[in-house]
Image 1 (cartoon, rainbow, N blue to C red):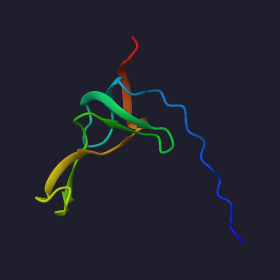
Image 2 (cartoon, helix red, strand yellow; image 1 turned 135 degrees about the horizontal axis):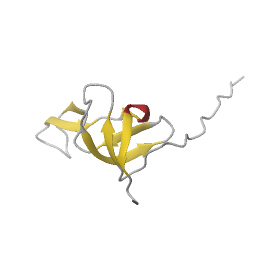
Image 3 (cartoon, helix red, strand yellow; image 1 turned 90 degrees about the vertical axis):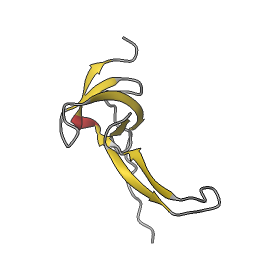
Image 4 (cartoon, helix red, strand yellow; image 1 turned 60 degrees about the horizontal axis):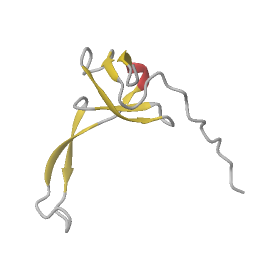
Length: 88
C-alpha cells in the first residue's frame, strides 16, 4: 500500500525576483545583490553574484573540454533582508 505524502503548499515570501536584498546571515553576510530566482517550495532564493560554489563538469559531447565553473547556490529566504523592491 502506497503512503500518501503531504504536498507542501508554496510559502508566501517577503521577497521576489528582481528585488535588491542584503544577506544577514552566513558566509556572505553584509553583501547586497539582486534576486535572480525564487523557489517558494523550498523557500530559497538565488542572488546574482553571491554564494558562489565550484561545479566540476566531466567532458561530454555538449562540453568537450569539461572543467570547473562557479555557479550561484540558493540561500534561505530568512537569511536575506529587503533593501529595495523591484516595483518601487
